[in-house]
Image (cartoon, rainbow, N blue to C red; front, side, top):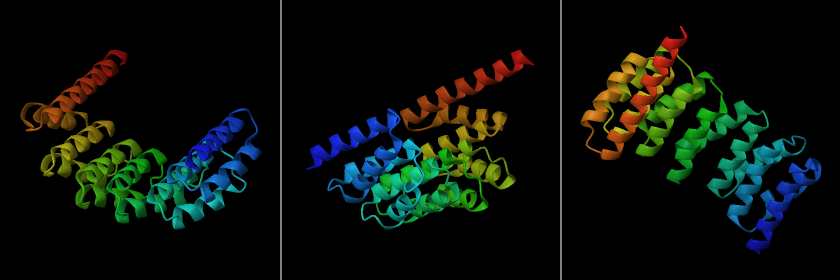
Length: 229
């Protein structure tokens, strides 16, 4: 049952931590393919990436990411592929999930995972820009805008895209995420002005509070950089 499968997944993870990675990988591979619980399959797929045992895992994870019926399992499998060094393949799978899956939480998580993956190909950057502008769900747009800042790609297209979002997006959370990303990419003066405007004028109190906190952190970083100069 699901309870015993969860115990098996925890035991397999513990084996990996104790150095028995090959044995742990085999157990996790079996759970990722065959467990009755979606949660356990998803956790096993995620654990394979953390384990770092690449021999059989990469091909199975690719198959899971492409073909698993549960979208959350596909997400964790794609993330784990990235952990195993298959960044290009993982990025394409995550982009597909962020664009096309029905589950908005999975789409948001996939867009966020692209920022942590570190893949800066033209396809990823353009895909994130498109998601930040055009995704139907505001949280997907917000997550994509945040990923553009985390990736650190300072191209003109990215800067201009984030500026447009921070100034003109209809959703205040998206504007906030874009402004924070601009600060991460070195556009600190512009980011400070945008954050100040949100801190003063956003209709959502949470956005005002978050913008104020982000502005404080940005100014503190600037002061620290000035002091070290």
